[in-house]
Length: 341
Ligand SMILES: NC(=O)c1ccc[n+]([C@@H]2O[C@H](COP(=O)([O-])OP(=O)(O)OC[C@H]3O[C@@H](n4cnc5c(N)ncnc54)[C@H](OP(=O)(O)O)[C@@H]3O)[C@@H](O)[C@H]2O)c1
Image (cartoon, rainbow, N blue to C red; front, side, top):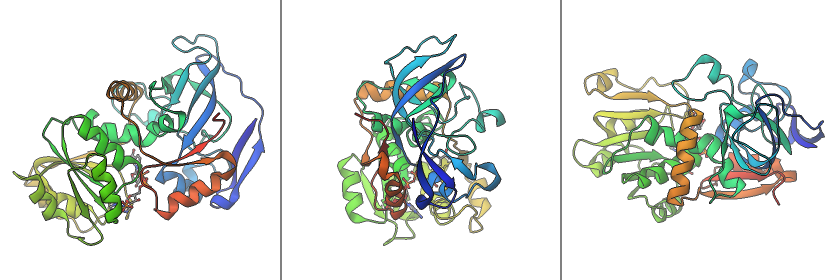
C-alpha cells in the first residue's frame, strides 16, 4: 500500500511516496481504508522537526486526522464492522474523563505514524462512527480542529445561549468554534487579518468582525461589542500577541480557552492582577477524549452542520497542501484525499 513519508523532517520537499506492507488488525483493532486526511498547524511544525525528541525525525507518516471505511476488524471488536464509515480520534487512548500523561502520548502523526497512508490500523478506543452528512474530508477535519473547538465551546466552555464568544482568525479551530457557538445560541465575534475573510465569517453566522491587523488593540472594542461586563469565553489561539487583548476583552469571571500559540508560546506582557482580581478562568484545552468526539459527531449530524473545507488536494500533491496551509491564505480546513473515490 502507498504511504506518504517524511524521509527526514526537512519540510514538504522531503515528502515521498513509499510502499509499505499492508497492516493487519490485532485484538481490539480495526483496519481502516483512509479516505481523506486534513492538516493542522502543528503538522507544519512536525514537518520541520519542531517537536525535536518528541517526534520521529525520519520515516514518519504524518497527520493525525483521518476518516475512511472499515476494511476488516480484529478479534474482540464490537461496534464496528466492514464498510462502516469511521473517523479517527486525535488521542487513540483517551476514552473519557480528564487528561492523563498516557492519553497525551497516544496521538498519531508525531511519535508514531499517522493517517497519510492508504490503510491504517486503529484501536477501537480511538475510533468513532462518521456523521452521516459528512464526506471523508469533512469528517477528517473533526479529529483535531473540530474536537478542540467543541471542547473550548461545549465540553469545557459550557456555552449558554446568549453568551458572547470571541474567536481568533479564520483557520480550522476558529471556524469550528464559530459554528459550534452559533449552534448553541451564542453571539460570536471573530478576528482576522483580512476584511474579505471577515465577510465570509459573517456569512457563516459571525455577528461581529474585527480586523486585528488594522486594530491591533482589539481587546476594548471586543469588550464593548459584548456589552455588559465583556466577553464570556475567548478562544485564545494567538498566544504571545493576543493574550493581553483577550484579557481586556473577557468579563470578570469569564474564561480564556488557551489553545494556540500562533504568534509565540510565551507571554511576558500580561499583568497577573488582571487575571487574579477579576476571577478570570484560564482553561487549557488539548483536543478531547473519545466520548466528547462521539457527542460532537451526534450534534453535527442532528444539526446538519458542515465543516468549512478550504481545499482538498490529491494524495500525490500532499506537499502542496502543506505549502498552502503555511501561506495562511486558507479559510477553514486544508485536506488531502488519500483513497477517496
Ligand atoms: N491545544 C490544542 O489541542 C490545539 C488543537 C488544534 C490547534 N491548536 C493550535 O491552535 C492554533 C490554530 O490552529 P489551526 O490548526 O486552527 O491553525 P490554522 O488553520 O493554520 O489557522 C491559522 C489562522 O490563524 C490566524 N492567525 C494567525 N496569526 C494570528 C494572530 N497573531 N492572531 C490572531 N489570529 C492569527 C490566521 O487567520 P486570518 O488569515 O483570518 O488572519 C491564520 O490563517 C495553532 O497554534 C495550533 O497549534 C491547538
